Amino acid sequence: MAILKVVHFPDDRLRCKCRPVEVIDDKIKTLAADMFETMYHDEGIGLAAPQVGLKIRMVVIDIPGDDGEQGKPENQVVLINPEITAREGEVLSTEGCLSVPEYNAEITRSEKVQVKALNLNGEEVTYDAGGLFAICLQHEIEHLDGTLFIDHLSALKRGMLLKKYTKLKKEAKRSGVEY
Ligand code: NI
Image: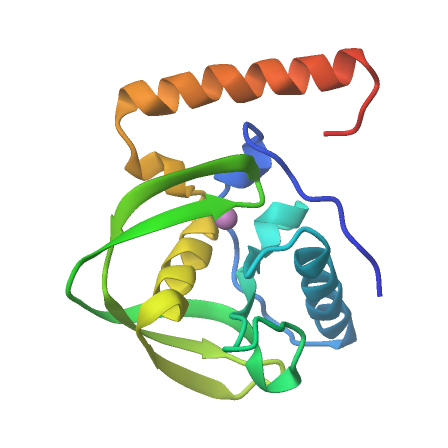
């Protein structure tokens, strides 16, 4: 297993429309394990393939249980070629993203979603999700079409963020730090 490099906003790789996974082979299974490891390392609850620079429709999610623990196999969700097939209600959600470090904002999401996908065994799975899982599903699946949670903010706020993160990136580059 390996910790992968997380791509940070602004980066064109976060803006791609990803292609479906066609074959679920050992490479995909290793990638899923690496994505979980990367996500735990960066203290996230969800990670989409474009966030590690891959243009494929694949997401991993692990919502901590009541004990706050992650990494239990029964809570680890791998979604291949996921699609939101139904939505219900509206809810305010305070979100962050591993690709937009140290920033949180409140946006509106659907309260409940139904998602269909394939799992790592190539089986069709359906999730009827509410709560944090529903939010996370929407956030991660949007990544696969190049949408970030900050795209739900006003143009003014997005403009400020673009400026701030472009500057951070330049500063990191100048001082030779990987960002
Ligand atoms: Ni994200």
